[in-house]
Amino acid sequence: MKELINTVWFELALVNAGFAFGSILLSHFEERTPKLKKVLKLILFNIIIASLYLFLGRTYSLGFIIFILILVILIHAVILPLNGINGLTGEPKEKYYKFRGWKK
Image (tube, rainbow, N blue to C red; front, top):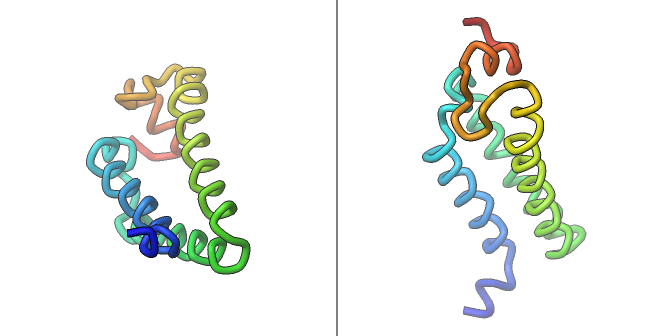
C-alpha cells in the first residue's frame, strides 16, 4: 500500500475523485459549460498535477491541489455571495448567468 501512495497515482486519484464528486454535487454550476471544455479542464489538471509531481515533487503537487480547493471554497463562500448569488445553489439564476457571462 505504501508503494502506491508514494507514486503520482495518489495525486491523480485525488484530482479525479474531486472532479467526479464535483460533477455529481455541483453540476448545476456548470450547466452551460460545453462538454469539451469540461473534458479539457480535467485533462489539463491531470497534466499539471503529474508534471508538478514529476519535476518538483509531492509537496508541490499536493500544494497545488490544496490551493485549487481553497480557491473553490473562496469563490463559493465569499465571491458568489458578494454578488448576491447563493454559493450552494447558484440562485438566483439570472445573477449567476450574468456573473458567468452566459446568456439567459
